Image 1: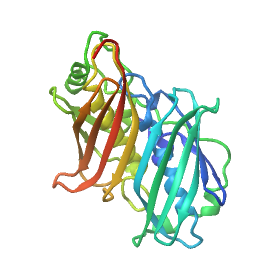
Image 2: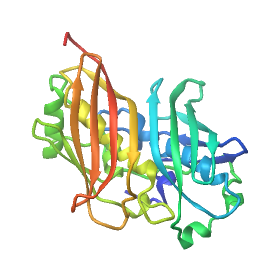
Image 3: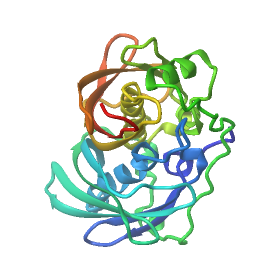
Image 4: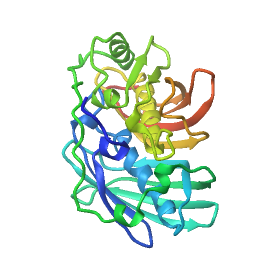
Length: 304
């Protein structure tokens, strides 16, 4: 994979526009953002969704401050597809010196609503030289262009249409089929033995925010991908699934220069149309960094 400069560059996010109400970003979706099925879903645009919501609060301060995301909730609408140009617009609904709440609406070039969401950011005391060096005015002077997405070596492998979800995940775990471009981008490996899948992430330098921690949108993408794979585990042959709703609770900021992170998933409930799954992000000593809860929507090929 080619060198990636940062979270937004990795996901083809740019073209920043700032006003008093909030900010807007655009993303060029490519096959580099697809999962093992070739599907582009919520984890692919989570970095943009998180950036416009947390950024709306950060931009509202005239003085240099540090803010981090505390909670992000997204719900999907129309599907996103490779080749689409997405636009996310946030509105800062409330702010004070401690907290900010923002909404986000993501659309495609046809004005179809891809996703809506809401988030809460919190002001924190820590800072860094990299953060203090950011020129907000220069950052907001958009060229209208988005960065090219990096080349990802992994491709989408053909999947036997007779396989159920547990068989698909086992094949990925053994290396028989690819985990897909997005998993390679996020440095994800999968362990699956028929039960709830467990993912491992090796933090990469490009994942860092100016505070040196993994950026909140990257965290949302990772936990969202974990939830999607947990949902895949409950598909039958020919079934299709997607992350319909994702709620991410941020507890701590994982350093981007430390060891591997573990994503343990749990199935809460499985129905014909929807399943509810959850995922936790921890390190080797059990520090809990985030928890996500997701609704997985199914299009079943046969009676449940």
